[in-house]
Amino acid sequence: MKIKYKIALYYTLSAALLLVAFATLAYYFSAESRKAEYLERLEYRARSIANVIIDEGHVKIDLLRKLDKTTFQDLYKESILVYNPDYDLLYSNLRDTAIRTHRSLLDYIKQNKLYSADKDGGEEVGIYYSENNVDVIVIVASFDKYGFQNLQNLQQILAIELLLAVITLVGIGYFFARKMVQPIDKLVQQVDTINANNLQDTTVAVKGKDEIAQLGANFNTMLQRLSESFDLQKSFVSNASHELRTPLAAIISQLQVSLSKDRSKEEYQQLLNSVLEDAENLSELTNGLLQLAQSELTQQKFVFSNVRIDELLLEMGNLIRLKQKTSPKVEIAFARVPEHDLLVTCYGNESLLKVLFLNLLDNACKFSPDNTAHVTIDFYTQHIMIQVKDNGIGIPATELNKIFEPFYRCQNAQQARGHGLGLSICKKIIQIHQGHITVTSTVGQGTTFTIILPHL
Ligand code: ADP
Image (cartoon, rainbow, N blue to C red):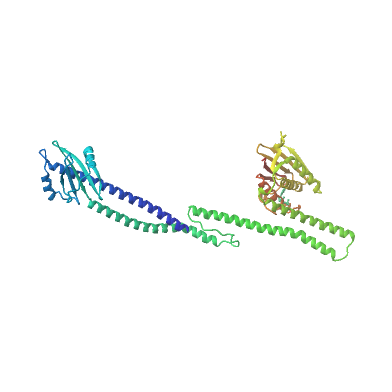
């Protein structure tokens, strides 16, 4: 069922229920008040009769008979029964004179002086009346014709009113529900038109400050993020293919040139060395892409264990020394002496952490004329802090926020080897470990990367 119909239905149902409850209460109280009023009237009637028939210490039934035929007959289907204290029937206006009141009821009236109850759809009141040492029991019963008629009228009026109210409620409910749902309908229509091709620069119209406007605004933010990530992906693919094509093209053209005529042994050796360099470059790039793809996986996909950060850094420093021909140096120092191993232990994935520090150490050596990376390890109760510092070319302030984007290389670093993937891989690895990475740099003086890794 559509939301607008649901809203209209719930609104109508609850309002109708409330109206029915009010109408029932109104009817109930009217009925109760009619009954109380009529019983009072009957009691007054019984007392008047008793008062009239007791005269000068005697019960004068003839007087009542006379009155009954003339003025008294004003209650509908009225029955009057008068008894003496010995329960002898002194007077009855009923045709069937055999009808007598039950003895137990007369006992009750004698004892309690007053009795009232429903009788044959009407009401009945009995009193025990004493005057000048003369006692009588008077029982008056009657049907409140006008009272019941009024109640019936009230019932009809309430039923008609309820019916009209429910019809009106359905109309009003539907009208407001449609009005409320209209912005959602519009939003749905607008969202329907969005696809991968027009994602860019597409926004949904947002009016007002209500929840639906908020939804629209959130949707716009989401669209913007989606569009950005689409753009990022597109530029990533074009960058990756460009980077892959360059060494491949170089390899192909070198091989074509070498095959065009016979060459000397030295020339072949030189050519093969050059092709090997390009192939190594290609292999480094594909490794980087693979690592980047791997680092896109979530934390659950990696095996985590306790990793000694100082040992890992030492290992990576040695590896760098072996890998690079330019004899790089990696100096590792503790800011303080750790009291126990756990202080320099982090809970992480060893292979990923190796990739992280290899990239940072490699960059520090690569981008500094002295080929040296200075590493400081510090530790706190919750985390370990590692700083990788160099005295190299530095990063221009305007480019600091871009270096973690895939394939981004600073203007002053174009001559150095690399593809601009290392730092984006580092950032992903840090995210997987729920850590932080920040950078400070001064052009011409050096760069410091600060890494925070939680212990556990
Ligand atoms: P790559 O080193 O392959 O170029 P990275 O992603 O590791 O790619 O680094 C991106 C860019 O950030 C580098 O090209 C360089 O411009 C800059 N950069 C990174 N580390 C340093 C550093 N220690 N000193 C100066 N510039 C750096």
